[in-house]
Image 1 (cartoon, rainbow, N blue to C red):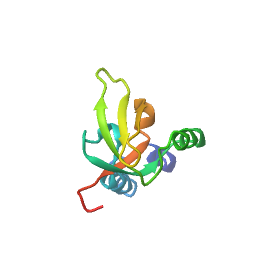
Image 2: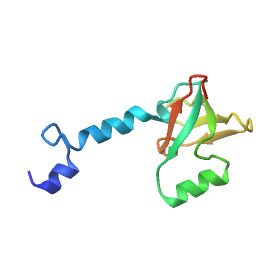
Image 3: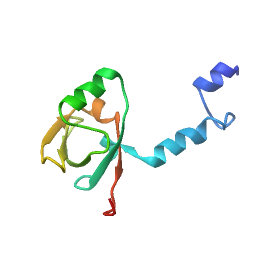
Length: 108
């Protein structure tokens, strides 16, 4: 396996890449994986410039505290409520996967 293949397809033989992936997953979770009706802090918004700009335009910022109101059945959009402005936003799952959040435990 060449060095390029090891970077593209990491596995246990290439252990220098895997711990980085695990560390990113332990810091937060995507908005789709988050629990319902728990306070969440937005810690990162991945994706291109257009995704970031669209989320900023509708009032979704890094550092905001939000709550996941509901998940639509059959892979539909999710409903997110902003704790600051009490505004509700419906997001598609593709965009929601690009938003990394952490669960707040009351010590915010």
